[in-house]
Image 1 (cartoon, rainbow, N blue to C red):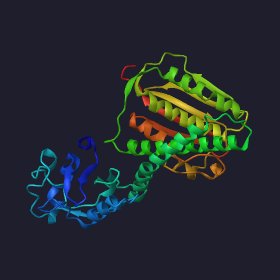
Image 2 (spheres, one colour):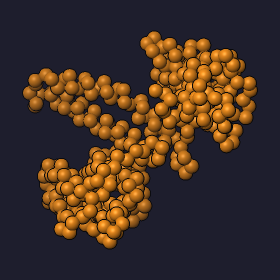
Image 3 (tube, rainbow, N blue to C red):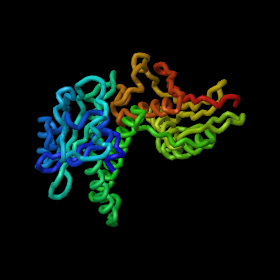
Image 4 (cartoon, one colour):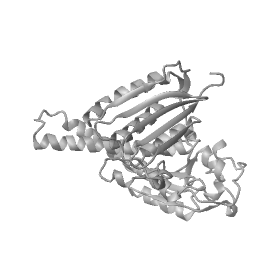
Length: 355
């Protein structure tokens, strides 16, 4: 299982001996840089993290410096065999590697430890923010799963909806759904920012039908907010496109959700599909307060919450995800807006040559 992981993984026993090393780690740094001739961890920071996890610590994450240039003789008989630990694996450019390491105790009681070594953020990206996103996503999944099970168990009881107990269960269920969605968004954001993790499941899609389906999904929310949701589709035939249906559906949904938050009743909010030369444009337009030009430069950055959103529910990830989904498909997501004149978000996709 660990052989298929993109992150480097070391399995360590209670005596801090390396039991196994996956190919991703062996390709990144020679095993002799990590353990001595007896197969024991030689990097003090890794050893400390492993001891913490073996001792039952709940959270062991740190940045560790590994110096391949100081590697001594590699482990002999105790060295795990196979291509994953081949000593001839070329070392990476430069002698120092500073991965983010997470140590996880394995078993109950703990009988071994997994050290997961992940490359820091790419150049130009705030490493601490990326590490925080990764850590939060991992740390929240397990407690959220248990919370969801508990809420589902409680909802089996038949209680009056207007009772205090029923209201508390409803609030808990909403909170679990909201946090689960945020964790999903955080995870997907990391995947969309990392080509190594991104897999598009493309299929030929009738974009007009996809837009109709997404629009119908949001009709109830629009009605609840007193906003008219309009659908405007180019009457001319549109060629099918090779798209990841789930991703494009999500991008459009994020755009509609954003528009419905700001559109004043009775609206409208318009979902438009039309051809523009070699592009197929999917547009979501509202007549809300618009966006100040100074804020438009950062509207697609993660966690951006403009002043107008201070009283609205949201994580600041919806537009960032939509922008990255468009980019992953070779398209663009742009904004046209001015204060007091509403906003139009345009997701543009290339049409096939000759279409």
